[in-house]
Length: 169
Image 1 (cartoon, rainbow, N blue to C red):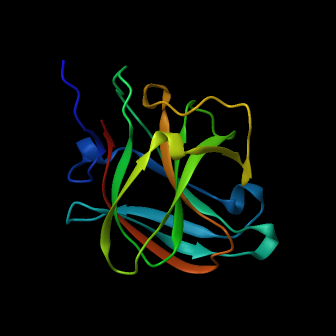
Image 2 (tube, one colour):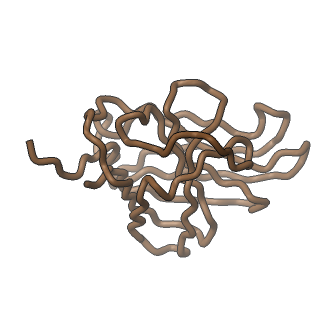
Image 3 (cartoon, rainbow, N blue to C red):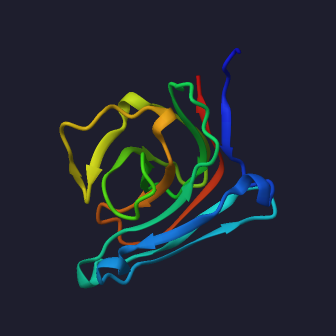
């Protein structure tokens, strides 16, 4: 079988948009707020406000990835329209709520659609902002969750449009 790209999420219908949920700093006492909305134009918008009050400062969304092939892909490609802020693209190799995640940063351009192509080898294992050592390299066949996080003292309002997310060969 010849392997090609596999689309994980494309937000054109309920069948391809996935079940996303919000995880903000309120799990630790913070007061940041965010939401994800599926738009009528086939995109999703992750938006909200980041606050440093009560030692907070992050907002994120996550989705479980269903039916990943056993083959390994080289990386992830994602099409975003941002607000000029940086976001962490994240993957987890388990279904746990807490624990470490592999992440890579993307810097968006304000109000410009851009495709980001990130090899899995560029993802670093992180736990609460700290890089971990001794963890295996990220492989697509082990990925169970994906997510997007905004943090790094980027206080105030944010908005990120997502067109699609796929693995590439």
